[in-house]
Amino acid sequence: MRYQLAAVLLFIVSSLNVFAGAAEKIRLVPQIGTHQFPFFDQPTSVWNYNGQMPGPLIRTTVGTTLAVEVLNRLEEPTSVHWHGLRIDNAMDGVPGVTQDPILPGDMFVYHLKLIDAGTFWYHPHLNAGEQMERGLKGVLIVEPKENLPWSQDLVWFLDDWRLQEDGTIYPHFNTGHDLMHDGRWGNVATVNGKWKPTYNAIPGERIRLRLINGANARVFLPVLEKLNANVIAVDGKPVTTIFPFNQFYLAPGNRIDLDITIPVDAAEETYILNDSFTRNTFPLATIKVKDEIPTKTPVLNIPTADNYIPATLFDKVYATKVWDLDAIRGGQYGIGWSMNQKLWPDADTGDFEIGQPQKVVFKNSSSRLHPMHIHGAFFRVLEKNDKPVVEPFTRDTVLVGPRESITIGLLPEHEGIWLTHCHIQSHADAGMMTTITVD
Ligand code: C2O
Ligand code: CU
Image (cartoon, rainbow, N blue to C red; front, side, top):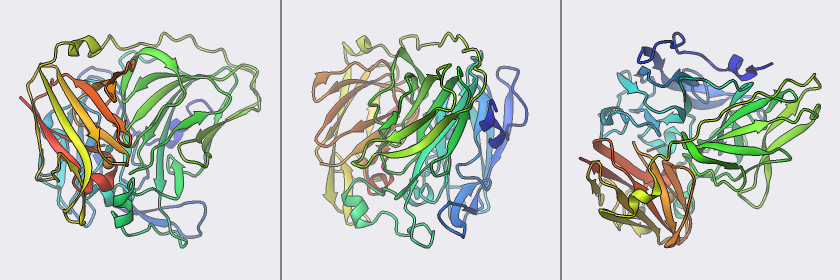
């Protein structure tokens, strides 16, 4: 039962990568398919990758170069963006910025040189409010060279769906209501495409649990009942100091990796991961401990980040870019979400100098949520409402709450034009996107 998830995962990676720098080839086929939710007799029509929702779990090793052939079998253009990866800008998957859209029937090959180990994910970056909501998304895990002997490495991809009574996906995307609020929130939350799934464990096990928020708009505040967990990585990067898991806002785009030890006397115990962001707490998934002889808890020396982007780097700052986030009139929906009063593609862009520490202020003038994401970089939160904040980790997505102002520090390291946007897809579709040019 160890690695029970592994059985479910499709190892499309052709072979285990033993040689650093080796190339691996995989294929993703965005297509129209179905997904069976437990509430309906009929499967629900979805769009997915390779017939699976979430898409194939890609697991590979740091140092690998992945060649991902994306063959578009949809009836509209698409692209694949690799959320959180620091890669060649031309492979970032943003039509109109880094590549042309992949037209129906066409193929585009992404060459991904994987320099960071961690939990990442992939999704389209075109008509994303609809394409992602119909089911196009998946997880990419980059293992470190020296793998730690966890007894299980669980991947829980959190998502939600807006399903109608007949089981179909509510077909109006980016409605006025969604736009005026926090985007499209679903009425069914799933983990790995399943409703309240149960995963098995045995007493004494030491589990790495990776949580990914792949929802279009919903923020999760996950709580693990009765079980102690430590946060060991955020947004793909190891933390600088391991800390207890509690009150972590997992906004769309965010990932956290947890270290969990099942107590040796936990036979037949169940542990529930609840979401507590909204007024109604509800279960997401359960860990059921079997009545078995306890396994010996592995001793792990969990690596922490080598002070990647130290906060002191920003003591002497060369530049600050401020983006004011607010709703304005205009754009294709009549209601636009703006950055400095501009709507994508007529954006107020950033221009950052390579190697020069840079501050960015996201100033939310609205009463809505904006999980702001920067492509191709990790950053550090420095201030919240002008007060210093110390987060022992870096991120690629930060939730900016109503009327909140968040200052981040970024070290521009990778040349190119990098998209920066709200990860609530309706807000992004309604204009809340810009680019940062690093040169
Ligand atoms: Cu998940 Cu532009 O990103
Ligand atoms: Cu937003």
